[in-house]
Length: 64
Image (cartoon, rainbow, N blue to C red):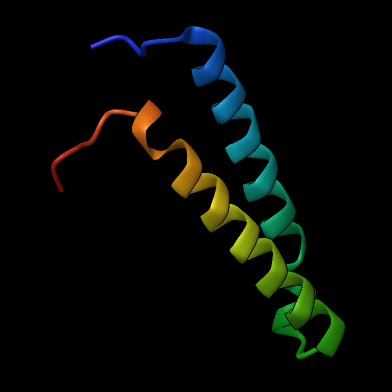
């Protein structure tokens, strides 16, 4: 099944990749118990969840 709008799919894919990169960038600081690093990781995870929620209908569902 192809996405309804290829531009929307590509934009969502880029947004998700960006948010994952940002999240991964804060892991080391959070793992070292840096207060700012933990805060930044939590903010990044909330932003990733928001993008996932906004874009969830653009991607196929897979059985686990």
